[in-house]
Length: 158
Image 1 (cartoon, one colour):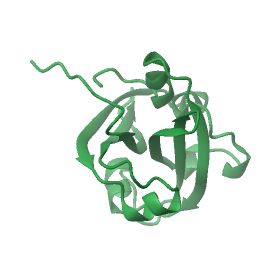
Image 2: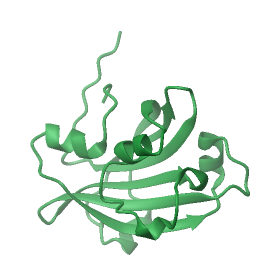
Image 3: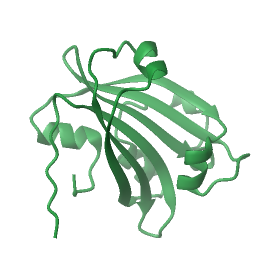
Image 4: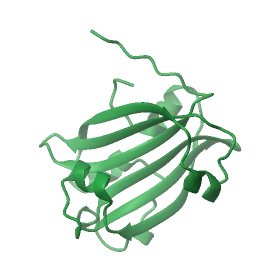
């Protein structure tokens, strides 16, 4: 949890062979949390991705990622969003360096649970993070729901 790495890399490090299913890609306006995290105005455009990482047919992590639209060239629907967002941002000249994160146990919001058939797995371990480049630019806001019955996180406190 204290090492900055992609969700896919974390899962592979735990011995999973994850598949990434892109559930939705939407362009729109940022909500208040996205505005604050990414330092956006209400009229700035964003791209919101919802992706599910699974092992075989078992859902492991549902990710909701928000990117700043102006950082993405061309039509967003022509991009293969199943890969690493860290790699994608690096290819756009915005290498991710670190993040600030909040960790909490939650029940999956009913709208998300119903829409993506994820009922019966509560509680989830939610990490909400703002990912920042080495130059201090916030470029990615992510909410990752980890299955509470599958993941345990160890943290070294000093």
